[in-house]
Length: 274
Image 1 (cartoon, one colour):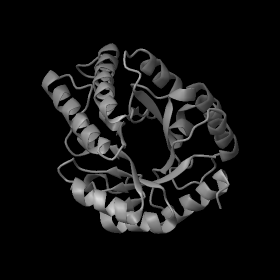
Image 2: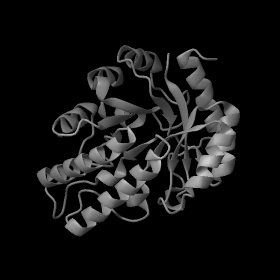
Image 3: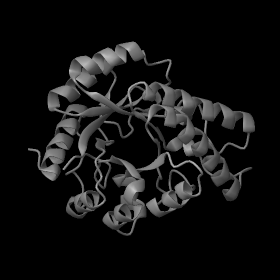
């Protein structure tokens, strides 16, 4: 099995209490991830300017850990930018923020992720317009990411966080409507547990559109701390020849270090690498 391990690191104070495993010190977090044997990290940063890319590269190299992805969520959480904004100027700012994250991630052969920045319909934006604005941004970002040889990653979210795409099927339909083929889906098992009738079947239906996995249990705690049935999920990932990352985007429960340890134990068990 070629799936690789990954753990999230958040540097965004406004997101404290959210579903990110490691926090605060990039140096300590990358070092701890390496100590536990993680292949990669996924970083949630306030902005590109908040990351010293040379320093980051040095930390990754010295730890022997890769950068899997950079999240764009701070664009919404910190800067209140979203891709379905009624204001065209704000939408342009949001797309520019996404491109800046793509450029930073691309230097490491890593992907950028669009989740909460997708926005939602409501108020001055009807559902069709919101979806069209999102599609336009995915076209822009997917084409921009192509120069780095990596896809842009788009994440369907549960109904409490967006009304754009909530299921894998809706995400696939959106991707198939694009002219670029350089956008893939992030399938987050927590969101899927809420929205999908059968998580494993949804992954099978996603097929080669599945580009990244958030490896988390039903209650958004680390894998093994909820009621998710992982056997069928792992069988589905094998069936679609998924060889990307299983990335822990989970609450740091009961604390960040134990959450990271528990995820690694679960990763090793389910991939047969213990």
